[in-house]
Length: 206
Length: 298
Image (cartoon, rainbow over all chains, first blue to last red; front, side, top):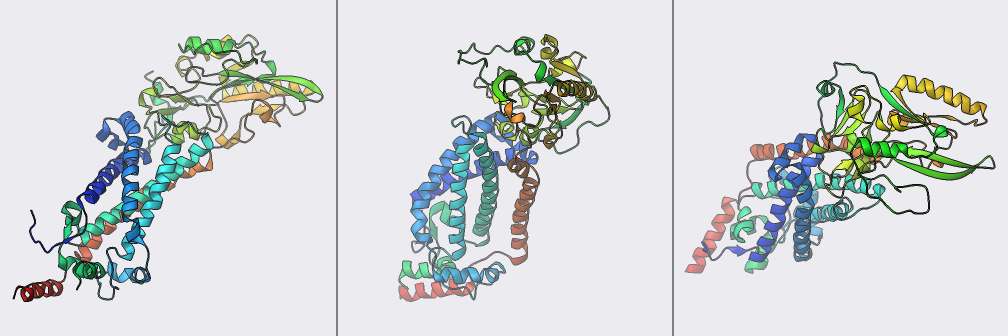
């Protein structure tokens, strides 16, 4: 159902499906992971069929997310190269957060903040995968020193990642007209012109 | 044990205080390495009392059998041949849980009530609450807990908490034919150890002493060693055991702090939305696009 044929295509169906696989597995991982992070969150284990099931399922969910994330990483990597305009955008990020985008430089498909988010998530994910393998006792029995380090890295990178995703989700809620890109792949031309003028020009030739 | 439930000093993954009202005597097991003959009666008594039957393994050409602790072998004798003062010495140490006053396993455990420290000092695993993550293994400075391959639960010496609760000495103590394993209040055990150390010193072991490492707040299983200056001789008994700083950092202040930080991000976002309002497309740009469309339509 195309409401406005002039809407701009931002994501293909396969890109959207990929993002949802990563998103759903991330939410399940965050909930099950937090359960073991601090006793305050332990009751979250009930969402997964009890504490033992949570322990069993968490790493398999991790495998799903890792595969989804790696595919997504290679899909979007070339769009996330830092440019001087991104650096300028980042230097003025305080104005953006303050709700004033008049002085922000023109941005392509992604702005500097989104690119920082991309790379920060990629680094966190890499740390999560490596440390997760190290502490996955059911399949890997590694020396205790490495497991100790793995447990700390996993907890720290996990906390950072949850924080980053909170910012990612909030940014999508804050910037109106964004979330539909994740649902059905399109954005309005006005949205693109407002927030990603470089990309708007590229797509419309204006 | 109805009253035992009142005698809990610490409980894993629990942030409120455990029962504090009753005061019980701190107990200890004292293993006098110098009096041990390596008969393994303690191993047998342990398996008998606790109804655990480990697989009959293979002979590896040494006296150690089984070769290591396991989910079904909660205590093993470790035999070491060393040369000290130009003499061959055969050191035999009964290895197992040390029942630390500051237990790293309990600190590392994420499952509420899976690890309990009784006020008498016994650190006990409650397997019905164990989730099998193996974090206790990372917390232990003595490499003691073992995860069962059959049920993925962690196991170790319970210091016969069931026997101690009814004023019985642990099974290994009962079975020891030479009195190398003693059991009583920690204070009495220290007194007894002092006499043994004195005796050993008279017999030429100048460095004899008690092993009650303070890095873990002292232990409720202590050793009398002829070479207390070199605990490492005894099959790698650590000289200064302590909970790994990584575990202390991870389970200490870092996690509550991270939890607060995440709550801060969530609330910060909410208040940002409430104070700054949504970031909508400006009317100006929407009109521009509309105008362009109309022009194109002409």
